[in-house]
Image 1: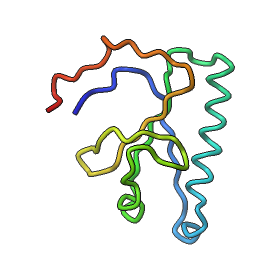
Image 2: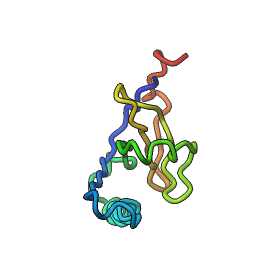
Image 3: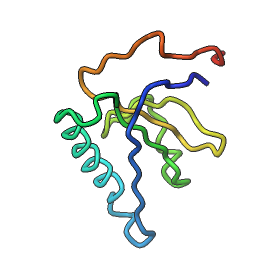
Length: 107
């Protein structure tokens, strides 16, 4: 799998079992994303190009099959050894150095 040789802020959300049916994780993820977008716009940590998220929920993984998540704009980039879906979101206007991508392990 290609390596993303850029800096990302990781975003993580945990919701207790008794609250999972209320889409709370989706809401917290979007609120966190909006907060980090404001941090980026304010110039905090200019080396960061976006957000990284790992979908661990066995219940949500089957529903997380789109290349681009329609509610959040995160792009699917692969799975880790545990089978968790890995997604990234690029901040608006970032520039990626094409030389920074290592695709030597790609098929």
